[in-house]
Amino acid sequence: MRQLNRDNLGEITSVEKPSYNLDDVKIGVLHMGLGAFHRAHQGVFFDNALRAGKLGYAIASVSQRTPSVSNILSQQDGLYTVNSADQYGNVPRIIGSIREAAFFSADERRLLHLAQSSDLRLITITASEKAYHQSLPSRLALLLHARYEVGLPGIAIISCDNLPSNGEFTKGVIDQAIADYSDGFKQWIKGHVRFPNSMVDRIVPAITPSSIEVFESRYGYRDESLITAEPFNQWVIEHDPLEEDLSETGIRFVDDIAPYELAKIRLFNGVHSTLAYLGQILDIKFAADVIIDPRTRKFLSDMQIKEISNSFNAPQDLDLVAYSAEIRGRMSNPALLHRTEQIAMDGSQKLPQRLFNTANDLLSRNLPTPRTCLAIALWIHYLAISTVIDDPMRTELKAAATTNNAYSAVAKCLTLDFATKINPALFPPIGRWLELLRINSPWHVLSILESENV
Image (cartoon, rainbow, N blue to C red; front, top):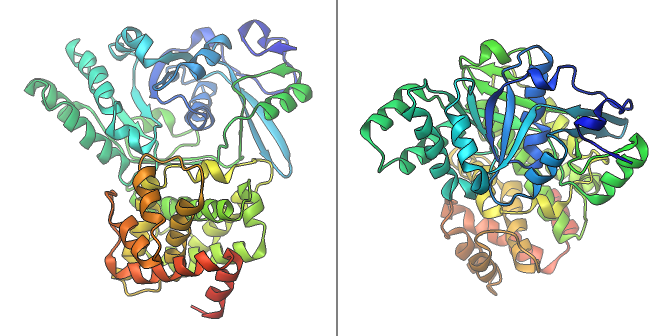
């Protein structure tokens, strides 16, 4: 069958295609991190911009660790399909917004040239939490310095990662990375480079060979970069000059991102992680198969409404009960095949903002924490019993989590070097849940929680 590329694009009639001429667009976005989420999220929003006639928002997307994805996309001339799928059907759409796919180590010279282009309007980022402490800041500094050297005006840098105040955080790591640069460059960044905070949301499972095969048989062309994602797609950014061009793309611009960010990180990401660890302990492969059980659904619903929703001040225009129900519905989407193993990755980097802050804030407000404490205990139990842990701190986490005494295991785990430390006053209740998990099935532990009527 035909492989998706520019030569074959005209022959494909089974799905929606770009409505703009690919030769008319200009690269205005440099994106760091060529993963599936970027292609399903920023790639779609900038495709919306191009379809709306904003032809200066094509993307050069950069793989940072390996060239595998950039090679595949280059072979397909940057074209790929996002298949929005749920229990009601599929809505595939070919995206043309990525006009260049690069690998940083091999294409640094080209990327520096793009940084020096007057067409460039912003740099966006999707990276793991740990990448912000590795090569990413120095690479961003290098690109910005190239722009500074040719006297061009500043641009916006927008993090699209689940980090609290992600714009401010990104600015902070770049400030550290430019410590040895000139004072003139530092002043240029301070005065001309913008770091608006943003919040993103879409469930995007990892690509699987089987999904590519099924799609090819149904739609008549092969896409090695096929993305399957939920229909829901959200991007909220603090007010920025970019709003003039991008406000009609589906991106929402607001005064203050913080309450939306907290709502998403805690009510969605915190619950998603909890669901994943519960699924891993129960040996359930897909997230939708975990939450479909009414016992899980009630536990997660109560966790959202009785605890998490009370841990922060919500945006005035956001109904947390309805928002929480929508989240549970999205997690129940059986078409996504989102693996609990994938969601469970890198807990040490994710849980400080997803669960630890929630627990601490509830405690500071003198509010109940049993479900949040149980969620943290589920993670520690998963660390102890799992044979494969994908986490940069796996060695020390595994050693701590397997300590014989459950209360000691909690204390050892939660005093490791995390971005946020759990208040030690929460160690005993977390230890109690861990002790119960070690001798009972998770279902029985959930029944104990229910019987306590908190």
